[in-house]
Image (cartoon, rainbow, N blue to C red; front, side, top):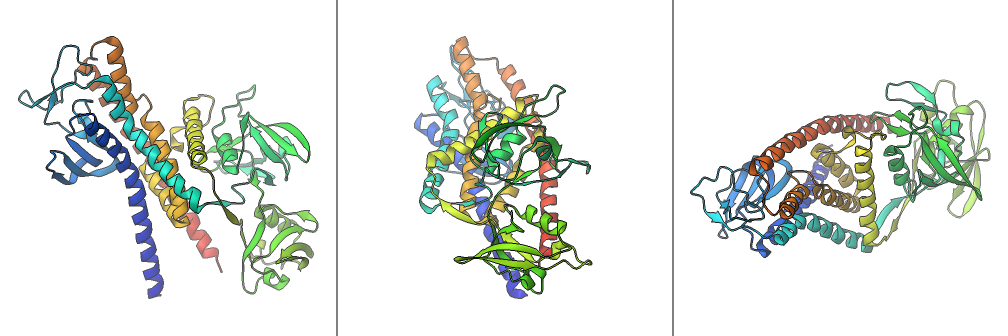
Length: 490
């Protein structure tokens, strides 16, 4: 008992270390990009902070920069009073920019006071370099991790790598608990169909299937969701139109399909029907009564539908094929007690670093496109704030270091793209302000910039708070599901 507690505590400490290292490291790398670029271009750096808000710890170094660790882990910042007025987030500056005629910035540090040292204006090119450097460093960090994964390999599960349908449900449970006929079955999708594209978007794995469906914006004549599947059935290519339903706790578009994968037995419960039938760990279940099995849900459904009589299971063990006979189920026991645990199986792949970067780019762009498309069913509640990111980091850490690398690559690509959006407060917003000032030939009014950024600070913090509510709910649901699964283990 004591050894188990020590092992659990050590595992939790390791997970916490990975979350802090890679989540905090992603923020640090972004701000380091701004910092080094500013130093290189001769821009005054007043503060380097990981996190925002009041300081937990700070130190004024010999180079004049205040290095700070702040309470709110919602990001970080480098205080550059010559470039941007962000005092509502970064705090007051002790310097201000000289308001030269024709300055490309014209911003003074709020609260700095008239006696604060004056700083010369910064040229437009330097501003662009410094503002873009954070995103560039995120991409470089992601590329470095991708290079490591190319060498050591990326774990790829057979179900996530699949584009073949392994299960078509008869019913779909909506968010309100109501059950409706499966859109996939109603449209004619079948087990074994190979999905080539959805709504014209090429599909390369099951993650593409899910995300393309969830972010889709297709609508029927009555405004109902529509998705067009390009599938390969045998040697024949078919176009099938499906009407997804909004289902599940997270209320995504779903059609009622799951991927195909090899059913590899990793666990046989003692004294179970499975053990009595002769199943062993490592067996691959290929068919029941001649019906090909490509998904564990299909396996469970077949058992339940034929529980009254014996079932012939085609199994591949080691280097030979064999048939096992599953006896009739006792009337008093549900087939959840059959006693088999399946593994999807996985293998290591070695994708190029560029491919590893391109896939998160597509994912981020699809999500953003779904957010701004009024015909989509993607809303703010589907985003991940700091709480959601930490939750996903913990899940990645539990899966192993390679998975942490994969998620960190996704996070850094996401940070780079989001930060370059032309939204005030973000780097892209500062680029937009500086560019408009350059085109106008004179700086934008300070009051306009202050008012705009104050409004967007409130909006962004409100969005984070709103998203975090849903992230906490999802975390609680996942924790409850983990407890149920743990209690169900023999």
